[in-house]
Length: 110
Length: 113
Image 1 (tube, rainbow over the protein chains, first blue to last red):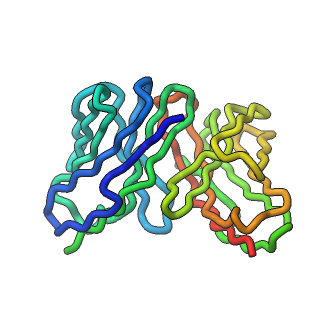
Image 2 (cartoon, one colour):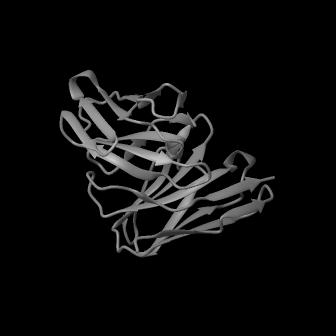
Image 3 (tube, rainbow over the protein chains, first blue to last red):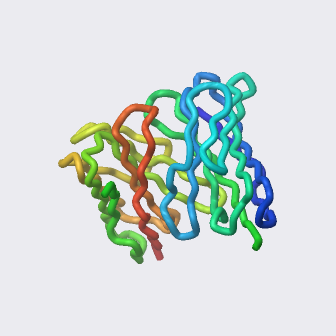
């Protein structure tokens, strides 16, 4: 069974900082990778996805994937207080079952 | 407007009572999911439904059953609820296929006393 781990568990950064969140997975057959963001008391919402090795940028957010290292990451440039949330990584091996990490709690201080 | 709707938002039940959680989506998505979220454990898959009457157990199906009689509606049933089923339950849907995004409902916070 897929084992998805996130680090760090929590993070406090000042407004404007660059933030990095990490996710490792155990199944080398994994094909599809997401980051979801969940504000307090709300539903998780998809933020970004990547399906091949490399980097993908959307606005202030960049996702890196290295399948050989079983690792992908999310980088937030110019972090804002509105980015404060629980960030969940998710991995899919191709059978529609999404395995989620336990999350990284991000707090951005004004 | 793409939406996944869960009812009720909050529910308090006594141990041994039956519980029905309901989920609807207006996107004609084939695949629907039930997850539970607990502090320190993340999102755990209870059941996945690939279409009407085509349901499959997830990682933690014990104590739960599901029903999907219409594509847009997916129910989670707890027969004789237990205190360890206190949790936040999320329904999600997707177009189907592993490369598709999950769309989540707002969740039901269930407390079993």
